[in-house]
Image (cartoon, rainbow, N blue to C red; front, side, top):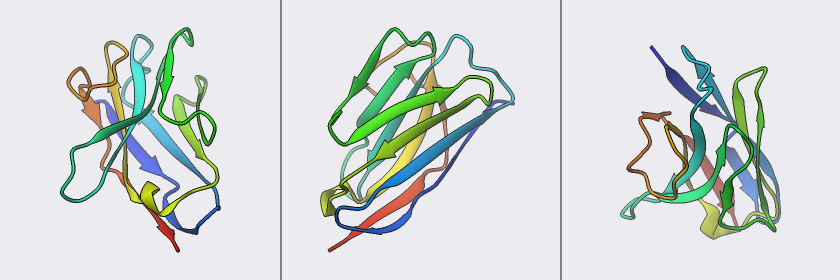
Length: 120
């Protein structure tokens, strides 16, 4: 069965950088959009960035600091985060769905999340 697995989270100081990875298995997701969401305790899950596998459509809440990219051969999506702030602290989730969206609703597959903590 199709699965998504995030990695790359951890503890970083203010101003530091992290690169998160999302490895897809069980499916090539050739017709799927891939997205990164994040969630803080007590708050709803929110969009960070999303990319269509065609590469034609993207969305990014902070393109000055965040970059979403993909490696189609490895079936992996990345989220590069620079100049991290304490408010970026959250669990970051990878998701896959049949169409690009800023909402959680269309996404059928989710990873278990990876914790990002920005210390100040």
